[in-house]
Amino acid sequence: MDSQELERLVRQPQESAKLDFKIEPYKIYEPKPTVSVEVQKWADAKEQQWAELVKDVLAVTNGSRGRVGGRRPKLSPQQCQEIIEMVTSERKSSFEAARLFNVHPSTVSRLLARHRRTEIP
Image 1 (cartoon, helix red, strand yellow):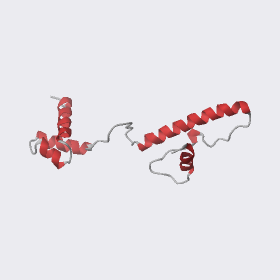
Image 2: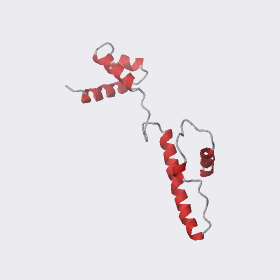
Image 3: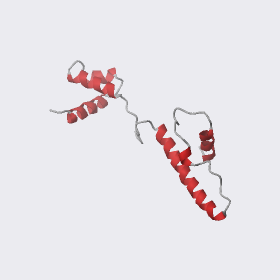
Image 4: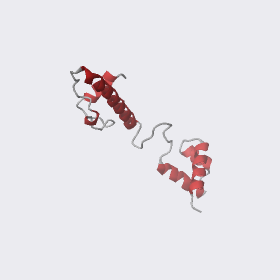
């Protein structure tokens, strides 16, 4: 996506659920100055403003938790808690819990190890 395509999307009057922010702080609608000395300053400011806008758009699309990189978690916090309760109460083995939640047994093993490390004795 080039800057013209992004500008076209941002200028659309409809609001998007993914891009729910205000465009005014980016000042991308300012007219180009006519004095040649100010044109270079204006161009540099525009480049920086577009860079900030693109970073913010990417941050919004990466999720509300501020996740920057990496994979999304396979299990929700509620599912993690259910697995911990199942396995610690010995209702299910870790292998059975993994199969039940459609994850690899290593995922359950890491979850239980993290729980043991953070558990208050």
